[in-house]
Amino acid sequence: MKVLVTGHQGYIGAVMVPILLQAGHDVHGYDSRLYRRCAYAPGGPMTEVPSVLKDVRDITARDLEGFDAVVHLAALSNDPLSNLDPDVTYDINHKGSVRVARAAREAGVSRFLFASSCSNYGLAGDDLVNEDAPLNPVSAYGISKVRAEGDIGALADRNFCTVFLRPATAYGLSPMLRFDIVLNNLVAWAVTKSLILLKSDGTPWRPIVHVEDISRAFLAALEAPREVVFNQAFNVGQTAHNYRIRDIADVVAETVPGCRLEYASEAGPDPRSYRVDFGKIARMLPAFRPQWDVVAGARQLYAAYGSGGLSMEEFEGPRYQRISHIRDLLRSNTIDPDLRWLPAAESPAALRQAHA
Image (cartoon, rainbow, N blue to C red; front, side):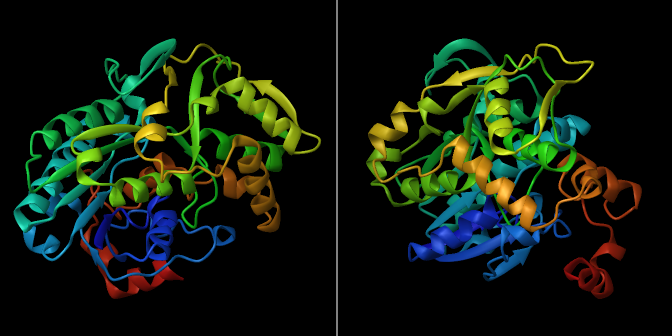
């Protein structure tokens, strides 16, 4: 199958591309490369595939001609970043995603996989929620994903199969690593400061899933019979892997010797608390066989941070924190307020520096 992956050089895309290639698919990429300076060497080399350097807000049907499927990952990827300018978030995550879907349908693409999020459930409390539960997002990020799901689903027809995958909070090693997601962050705190710092009171529920297992879920949805996945939403993760934040911290404490647990002075309840039922994906996509758990993930990260000599400056710097990186690009006039590259940043010299 000829597959286009948008956001193929992001945190998830950099892991998903080699998994799709290993399964025998002809994979191409499409990315604005906002994070092209954020490669993390211990995460392994980036897998190069034929690709287009372009913003999803500018995509056309011509860009998608000849593809059998589109895996749409490209988005502003977490709550702090999406809240930086909600209008830009809606422009990229909602309107941009719908634009990609419309262009795909016009180009004759038969399957469209949309990366949504369990953040859609927002204020769900302690009860397990499945794909039929009310959506109650609490951030521009979650709202943008809910809106995109609705508008993209309306495009589905006999020739255009849409599928919505809602991953739990990701963790794990990637060539384009992030330190701003919970397990990756806590292990980095423990390694660099011998401290596990919780910024909430530790009580919120959060399901988590390894980035490789997210990629395997997309592969399963890509290859499943059309009638199984047509216009369906699937939570991506395992029901047993719903944790309170403090439980994740305990795993990190057991993994990284000599660290201590501490609550930030402003720590309090986090309104984002949800427990998710992942039974549907287990029943309907049996090809999805997750291979990771939180203990193995913490050990993977601890080993990588140690081998790479992770420093406090690197951890706290802007390179691997999405909101900090974007603010750094804005301060340096590398991108404009709409998060588009300014001309000087696209010069041959600037591109060579980004690869250095």
